Length: 268
Image (tube, rainbow, N blue to C red):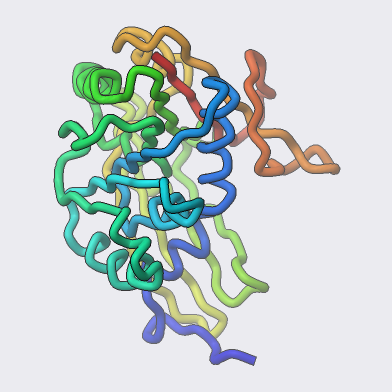
């Protein structure tokens, strides 16, 4: 049995990757969605707001012809990712290029697939800012490239609340804290905390200052940016019909549930 985790013994990036990210199925979704739309396999990938470059690391594992560019303005997660996610790749790590730059900067090579995951692009709080970002993505993609971003919504997404999730057989608890929300501007202050069986807590491990965006509006802004096809991929439910099953399919209708996660897939 492993040593019990405590707030003083953990690495917040390790906990984030275990609690929030699901790199292998995410990369599979990105790859398969491109193939579904274009009828061929993608090769070059760009990960915006990449943090620790976990998706990029999984992308290049697919084969020697797979390459990535990873963009983030924060040097700390980039350095952590280089040491903890890329180093173990050996020579394959050479095909993951990190850039400590604004996500609106152009790629060095036009990507087949570009993504913004974990709602990170919600750092853009006004419509002109979001439109400018989406336009930069459109202009940057390869001629047959696609852009994929995730989002969350539902009535619970606009409430001030804490949501707890037990992780890895209750070795720790992931806490999503919607600390403050301004319904007039849509601006929100959000935190991630981690709690442990001994009663200790890693409070405010991550803090986000975002605007909460709605799915229809984001779809409209993507279309305004120039994308000719913007589709929603909605999550299915498990056998009891109460929880998401992690499988996303293209849909024009979704259930009016209290909370949901979905993807928007934009193609030139």
